[in-house]
Image 1 (cartoon, protein in one colour):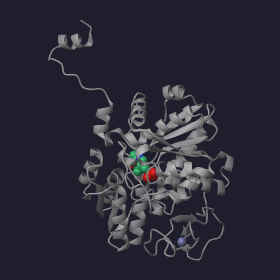
Image 2 (cartoon, helix red, strand yellow; image 1 turned 60 degrees about the horizontal axis):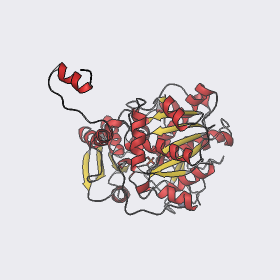
Image 3 (tube, protein in one colour; image 1 turned 180 degrees about the vertical axis):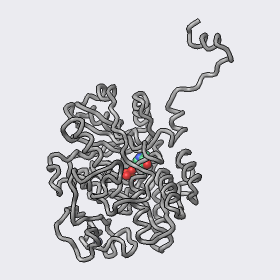
Image 4 (tube, helix red, strand yellow; image 1 turned 90 degrees about the horizontal axis):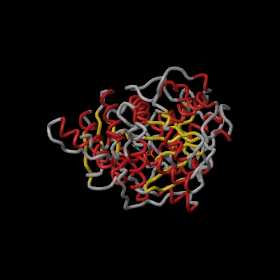
Length: 418
Ligand SMILES: *Cc1c(COP(=O)(O)O)cnc(C)c1O
Ligand SMILES: [Zn+2]
């Protein structure tokens, strides 16, 4: 079982108070001397650790780098990212029936997804370790973010995508930001296998969420939610519901909360319950939570309209499963129809999201129906990507254009006003 306890011991390999620890065997490594993504000894996942953890009053400025005191660097390759809206959605709040409901819309980042938060830190680390070629496997948004941040940093970028399974907006971004795009006849998990091989052979710097520094950037989602919710309500949210693919965000949020507890900023009781939502056709995390397993089973066949979470082998499960369990959260599977309905309902509040993002609202609704989430809870749903990422899904879910003759009379006829 993974050990995610933060300790006070600073190992000799620490560089300026930062090091990497293997969550399986506890071995520590220097953070930037060599390139590594997993433990040399046991291949376990690595986590960035700090000698000093900041308190809220040490944060200043806006966006991801507001939280530099909680990150390995003071600044990075920035577009800039973070500082996303925490929308109020009064009609949904009323319909779902919770004390409060807010939507943290990560689609408002520069390339339209939360991946930008991870990339600004990850690309900074790539510069530190001196690797010029960046690579990732992607269901789309990671490739868009990698391409943009790589371009900004003047670096070469390579992305591997599952052919035919990436939404149009995301490929367009990767293409225009000058990534070299390789379409693999396979699913996301198979693309990731290949990119990991390339990275192991020293051909590229891997910027999937297996990279522990990407999760450091994504942890700022949690810091923003906590600060803003406290400002608005005088308390932290009871629960955060989020879409889960590789479970990087789930892992990153749990790390955020462990660090806040360790720094004495919040108590264990104030940690929001991490609640994951997956598509029924790609739900290995839900399966592991429901069956009480310490590991996920790799699903070889996955399918869902929510292509961003069409993932059968969530690499961050060893970090994320304890996060869901220890915080008192849960995981839920939702159908593609439920996802589309939630996407429409969010759009009806003016919040435009891609299908995967709507899984959080669909999951909240289902857990309310089941009585798992109670009516006195304050909930934040994370929406991970922008509506325009997947224009085809939006067009399909939305109203159909109506052809009309070229005259005011014809328009009025159609509106039934004549
Ligand atoms: C990457 C992504 C996810 C999945 O996030 P994980 O951290 O891998 O669980 C969900 N939604 C969107 C829109 C994404 O781009
Ligand atoms: Zn190890």
